[in-house]
Image (cartoon, rainbow, N blue to C red; front, top):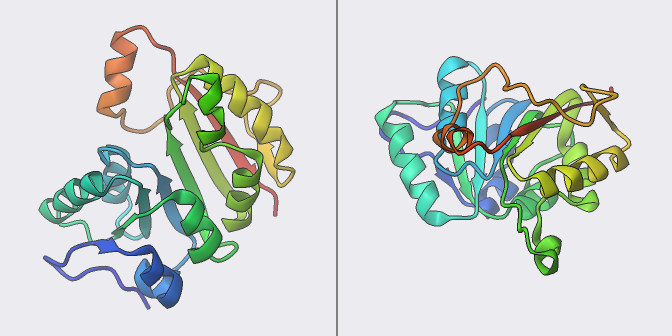
Length: 205
């Protein structure tokens, strides 16, 4: 059974609703596709339009961005997306069961460049362990960043997640743009000459 919204129904969920009712009732049959920090939602909307039979869940800490993305979902009549206003840590720790995510995207998270703010960075060893638990066997994790310092931070953190294998080994990341639509932010940063690197990992069965 799936709970994709009916035509004209807002695609938004509260984190507690997701926790209480479960992924299958709120989002759709797992394994689902998850995007953490969807921003303008270009990536998740594009992926959902390309794969109408898959269930998508977007998490974003900005309520304003969730509201804007919800309007875009309705305009495009996409019935396979649900959006949650919450921190990713809360949803992963409290609302998503183990093995329910088939693919996860984290596209250019905030690098928090100042050293005193590094503890606020999303990619931390504990976070990656929690995320690895949510991934299904053979589930994919895609992370990108345009910040060199954060790239090195991520490259140091990911190997500590022992359940995940680097698909670009022995290189820590790829400089090649993946086969997906480029977001407006990515296009803007490339024009500014900022390099974007891509991490792709697979969970072991």
